Image 1 (tube, rainbow, N blue to C red):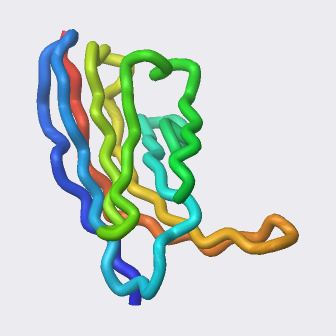
Image 2: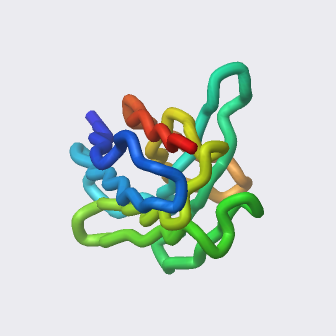
Length: 120
């Protein structure tokens, strides 16, 4: 059974940095894609950043240049380095891991979420 365990959230002042980590267990192979999503109160969950097993990355426009996603395939671990944090980055951050298949379908797994709060 796949489990994703996140760590690294917390409270930080605007302009500060945090690093989120997510370790996946229970998988027999590397996930095709891993990433981070976030959900702020009253808003829909949105993609923050994603990375494939080939290390191709994709970022939301709002975090481009401030956040960096990375992964260690052999450990099924993904990281999110967040710099120059802004109050609007405040949200619950969720780790995602997915197997993708021909035809576009995918199997998604989610972490429990970690709170990131940025004070002004």
